[in-house]
Figure 1: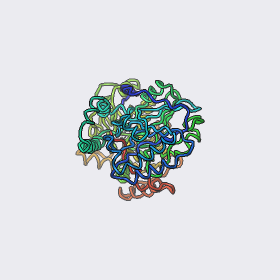
Figure 2: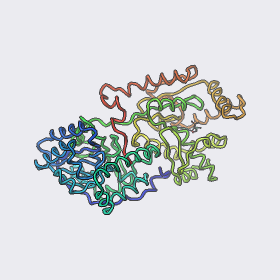
Figure 3: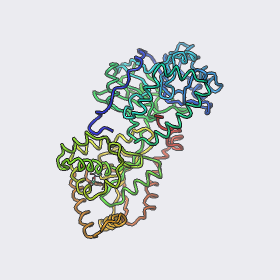
Figure 4: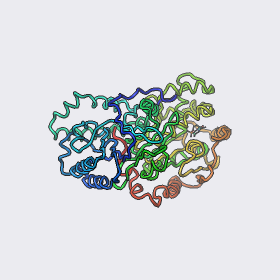
Length: 510
Ligand code: C5P
């Protein structure tokens, strides 16, 4: 992620102009990923289309209708016949059926859509009482993923598409399978925020189209965001059998209006658990292990402060000068992996973050309110990163400031003596000389510094739970945390989502 605001992005290639639909009653679906390997999903979607209300005027499939679209022959496959029939049936009734290109079906051509009575476009514009709404897949806004954007650019070249389509169908199918495998591996290697949306790019697209709001898919999350200038963004979750369309009516006032959202169902926020505590309380070990057990992302907020401190020191800036620290932050790319590792300008940092120099300077860096605000803002975005099904965050103010709306907030406690004993053991294990008294004194000093940070001082959040980690083994503490997290995983109405935290689908495929 670009450190000092979103400065390092290039505008997306303009592509086709958006298709103007005007004020129509529309149904929107996204990210169906239909494939012949799961014919029951195809029939289930076709059946859902059969339930379209009589006054429906437009159906917009916002990309990735297909798990991989490799050419018009696909419509002829027996598994896809019900889909073709359902789409043609709607268009026969006078409904405008529009297939937007996603990343999986970027090869769709107008003639391919016409086989099912559909138009093909990159985006559409709908008019509502609340203003124009831009509907598009959304992958074009994930601009930090440069390799994917390069591929996207190439796949939109006419000559390359024509060349691809000249290959035998079986070759194209094999090629698509191969590309999917490569893409899955590439996604697993990418830092989380590389896959995230670059909001200024969405704002620019909205400005360009004179639109007040955008509706996108692609990220496989359900979210609403307020963008710059009061514009709105709604991210629709991937379709799965039983999930209704987003019904958009001309009377909709805004993305929040009940009419607009009527069929979308409740927004599914990515759950967040926070573990705060003083230095040496054991929160980081517990947070990492909890995240591993849950298959969630681990956010080590202390490591972000340490990484910034490391760069400040490496560049000879003054850790005590807020402007210098902010300036340093604006010049670096700071990312993190789902296991908590922090990456600065492509370099993963681990041992470098635990040196005595960083230890001494990090408290100064963490004292600057504007630095804290800038880092908090970036850390919060982890929640909406593609493929992240939950976040365990640890720190001093993870539950009070970074994620005040966390689903579970825990304050990890341990006596200062116990914390000093743990710190000393860690240092011994790392082969460092240890003086118990010095460790105790350093902890007392750090506690005092942390406590002086006003709203960010470590404390139990209202509604939070305390975990006394002095007498529990690591195993016992993790088990206790899991019992506290369990209700989040199986809320009474969670249904299929609880059984599969990804909702049956992995994140986007670039
Ligand atoms: O947890 P850790 O010791 O790695 O944190 C490094 C430093 O970053 C701490 O001294 C603490 O003052 C600061 N920090 C913070 N707010 C957080 C996490 C860490 O101020 N949420």
